[in-house]
Image (cartoon, rainbow, N blue to C red; front, side, top):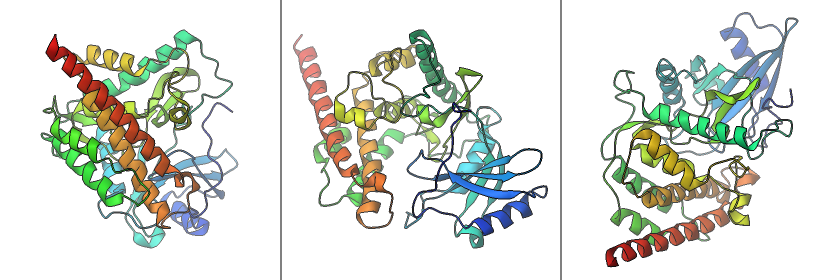
Length: 366
């Protein structure tokens, strides 16, 4: 059982009213009679995920509850109803999504919208694989490519036939992202944060046209997939659809690569690692790009822009979380040092920009 991803203690300031939750569950699911237990999953820094279980004579009945974070949040952010609707619609053509059991818009329950879904019992590859999971180099590589294949599979879904044409605005996605994330970063800046002015200006000047429009996950990482405990190389679930939309697939891959910390990265980047991409057998970022482009049929792509964008977007997300901590809107101690991560990500972006400019200059001379 130690291989299975486990929920733990509830973080300070994120407790639920157990009596209210118990009453709601027993009213919604008429067959529940046991005692309630509420635990919280450690992953995620945005929407919150809880394990709700009822101990009964015939075994525990388990559910997953997803709700927005506590504290002041943007009006358009953390739309739980949209997330649940996307999952319900997409599941018909992309089966690796948990079943949504019910959606609640009654603000009297928790003061927010939330939904309940089935629990997929499995392994979630977080910063370290479970010590009991001893994969060879070849098995680790197969796991790596299987995860990337799930992203490729998503990008190949016919969103129009799936009834998801209104999931996003479609064309013009690259421009909207650069403009939108630049605005979000500026709105969340604190006096101790990196400016990112040079990076934002470079991204604005170097924007490519959208290469395609497809369904994108927008947060596709190892710790958002669930592995079959009986066959750990098989992906049985993809989680966290909060930011799914219609957009450019290369931008989606760029987002994923921002979290891809490989074995030869420096110690500070290693300290930010949230998935086991450092293990022997895992592809490097460049190998991921080559693998994805080859299997997706794209050619003559310079991926520098997408990598820089992904790191900048991650920095904006990190700064938004730090802003909430800085202004006392959350007590989550994980966010206390996020400002330093932002400064590091700015330097990483600037190094990539310099390398790109040098490469372009050398090509122009040859």
